[in-house]
Structure formats: structure tokens, C-alpha cells
Image 1: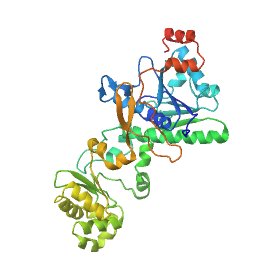
Image 2: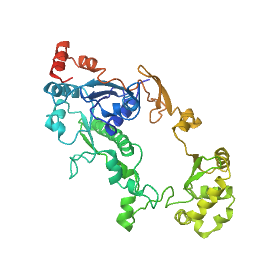
Image 3: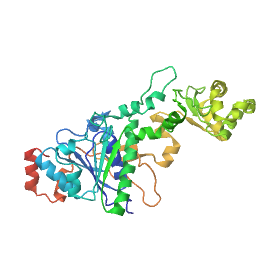
Image 4: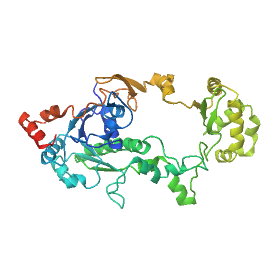
Length: 395
């Protein structure tokens, strides 16, 4: 069965998370992805977070389905080699500061001359223009600037940043979508184009209608902890055995089922109960009712009772629970990949399922530069030319 992106060639020049994650997702569905790293400064994600036997575990996920090669783009030989690679590619993903590729004479003008059908995907903190464009940019700054941190945390606590790469991951998803959109346009026009992805933008999109609320009403969304201003009860609640569960009542019918379940059906008759926003204004009453009932039951009892009542609940799980959760197991969400360095390796599976042309994980992240000679040989370089590039320091 042919993968849906089979025949698509992607050069991943980016480092850390947003750009490389986009390339990973393309590779998961059949694109040939070549990871190009500096010979002496590998992608920092290889050393990010825990490692085993000196092998970075985050890289094993981020580098999956990618061949790896080294190339110093600032060296003359490296520049010429990249142009030769670009002529064979459909997509380049890069995250250098604006102007860096141009400094090496590898900007859009040179790359599109080498391949007019190329899609050059530029992922930066702040975009290719504007007053902040040349600043160093990371996901943390996007989480702060976008308004995410301002609405996250308890009302009387500080703005709260996520303990993982949220903005980078959202930008990675958006970048993969942007690449496919640009490729669809190329199918009609025959021409490539530049994708300008600023990490500060996709997270603002997923935060919802905050700009419109402010524009039309002057409304600034406050920090509300686990509560919502749109409905209640909506919170996390501690069970009798010390576990936690999350309850959501976004639908009116679900809210009514929850109150019947916890033995407080009289609250449904209150005039304010018919509106999600009005219920949120009475969250203390509703949280008290739900929390008191949940506190008298174990997590298993709570889940079973909510399921029987067709009310929405989920356990608050850490990674240990995720690895044994029966729903994740049924979906094969965390799958096993055989790795030459580490043996059987469990990681998140491809992002979604296709009934006819599914994605797959062929291999986990490979060692730095493992495929350099193979890629260059396929490009038509002789052993002598490859040796010359090594002598120059371009490899």
C-alpha cells in the first residue's frame, strides 16, 4: 500500500521543535525526509531531556522516519551541495533567524532559481518581518505573548507557563498544514512559494475568540483556574482513594445528568441553571455539590457511575496511567518501534488514522550524520567529491 505522501521529498534544516515536528508528521505519512544538521553542532533536541546510554530519547521521536546527514551551509561546498539537494526536493523546512539564509546566498531567490517548484517553509518565533523579527524566539515567549499564560493558573496566582513545548507543538501542526496547503497550490500553478510561520500566531488562534471579545466588548478573559466562565460544574475533583477526576458539562443535558447523579436535582430547577454562563456564576454551589459526592467514592466508582449516567468524566492521568489506559491501547496511540540502539522503544504513534493509506513509523531517530554518504551518493557526488567536502569541513 502506497503511503499518501510517498514521492514527496523534504529537507529538514530546522532545529529543536516546531519545524522538525512538522517534518516528522510529513515523514509519518510517507514523505522522504532528510534531516540536515551542522557537522559540529547537531540539533539540540538530541540532548534535550532524559537520555539512556547517552542516547537522547526526545530525538528518537522527533527524528523518526528521517535520514540524517551533515552539512555546513556557511561553507562554499555546503552551499553548493544544498542547492543541488534543493533541486531534488519538494519542501525545505528551516528556522534560522530571518536573513541568515540570505547571508549565505541561500535565500528564496537562489533556492527558487534552483527549483521553481520548491516550497520554502520558514518557521521563526516572530515571522520574517516586523519589529521583533530578528529577536531570538522560543515557544515560551509565544505562550507569554499570546495571552495563554495570562489566562492560565489560579485567579490569585501568577500567570502560568505550560511544562512542555505547547506553542512549538501547535506551530508544528500548523506548519505541516501550511506545507500541504502550499503543495496543493503548486499542483494548480506549477510554482512553489514561501511559507512564513511565526510561532506566536498559531497559539493565538487556538486560544479562541479573545481578540473579538475585546474588540467588541472590551472583555479581558481572567484566570479562573480549572473553572470555566462558560459553564459549570467544570473542574477537577478528588476521589475517596486520593485520585483525581475531571468533569465537564459543556452541554446543558450533561449538566442536568451530573446534578441528578450527585443527588442534587433541585438545582436544575434554579432559574440560573438553564444558562452555561449563569451556572459558571454559581460555580461554588455546583462544585460543592459535585465535589462532596465524588469525595465519598473511589475513582473506579466515580467513572462507572458517570458512564452509567452518560455524563462526561475522565481520570486525571499521568504517563504511567496513559501507558496502560485501555482506550489508548485500543487505538495503539503509544506504539512500539524497534530501534538498533535501544531495542523496543515505545512512543506516540502517528497523529491520525487513514482507512486506505495509513501512516507508519519505519524507524526512530538515527545517529547524527548516519546517512550522509548515502544521500550524497544518491545525489551523484563521487567519493572524491565527498572526501573534498569533508576536508573543507562542510560535512
